[in-house]
Length: 102
Length: 414
Ligand SMILES: Cc1cc2nc3c(=O)[nH]c(=O)nc-3n(C[C@H](O)[C@H](O)[C@H](O)COP(=O)(O)OP(=O)(O)OC[C@H]3O[C@@H](n4cnc5c(N)ncnc54)[C@H](O)[C@@H]3O)c2cc1C
Ligand SMILES: [Zn+2]
Image (cartoon, rainbow over all chains, first blue to last red; front, side, top):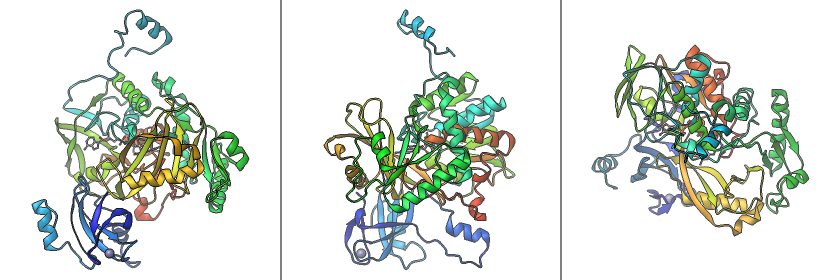
């Protein structure tokens, strides 16, 4: 069972308490943008085999969103961080580089 | 290739079965092929087969990183049906279903196609309306399906409890000519027919790079060396995103785990396939007597070929109400596959931004049933550059907003 720590309430919770929300750090585009940008935002995904930055919601808990770095080929979790971030923070990147969880 | 026949069986019986030979040939790769297909699952092998059979293109190699049929083709629950809502889907799935009817004869290999009938249960009023609509659409498309009342459902599948309490059976969409087939045999049969036409099947040959020159594909890098080609067909299901990345573009899909499980074998008690989309579960009985059960996908990206255990519990919990007898069964095995799910839940059979490179993917949770039709259309697309069967499934549809919205018809994995 996947266990992630919600950075909002600090609890380490099992995946049954969470809702997955797909790839993180997507740039949002609205109706006035080009077709290309809109397609990118809505449909195109990196779908990486490796470290994936992704959104989760602590649905059956505090209800808040957060982000996680998780390897899709091993299920190793490198850490979780605030949803109010545009890019993965340095401690998460360092953990990935070291191959260890934060 | 030695043909299978009653005479051959008699002959081999008299000489200790020593004359059967290999099912497919083992040869080293050539330096160049007209067409390279990546992925020896059902869709890749069928594509190669119809390239040879329908278009006479036989200088073809099929490259497989693992073993032939070891991907989703060897992991699915083998449900075959063509009762979809949208016209392009009905066309390709019905082409596939009708090819399945004659496939054993065509390949001279028993794929054990069993048209035992498929019921899709309606357990909410929303589903009643949805399936009646599908039945009407199917009759316009020339696909034989029928709306049936609860009494008929019970007659077709007596082990079912149709009275609820939470999800009473309100009727069903019945496709009498749907059913199941032996998944491994489909891969093996196509592989045997491909090598018989002189094609090469290279196992343990992983594609690690895609060579291009001026926007055109020129070959692939593999764990068995570089191989050149004129055209490249990428048919790798869950790994499609990885291959697209090698060629410098992205696809509108994500890879997630889908699981299935089987019970201990019991005496024959169910001779139809039943799907219950509202509770996210479906079941049939294998020839060995095991109850074959599947459910929904995990919600997060995954390449590990195993899924979350709680999904199994949820699937069984849901099915026990409709099939009370399974509460007494022991479950024997569980496994997972990595399925490629697109934005509109329909497949992609398409040209790509790289000239000469084609993709066939996005079959997600339900592509076993489509193997012959997909191979037929994909072969035409590669040979001629277009095919009526694949036309609506181009990857540009996401950009243009021309979705093939089957998310209702494919709401559960099957
Ligand atoms: C549990 C489960 C139940 C299912 N139930 C049903 C069902 O009841 N009915 C139905 O119609 N469908 C069902 N499906 C879906 C169905 O199995 C798939 O849609 C179908 O098998 C896909 O076939 P394929 O040939 O495209 O892919 P695969 O069989 O997965 O073949 C792709 C191949 O590509 C190879 N490959 C990947 N990367 C590389 C590389 N770099 N180099 C070389 N080779 C590579 C893989 O090893 C693999 O063998 C189910 C799937 C699962 C997982
Ligand atoms: Zn929380």
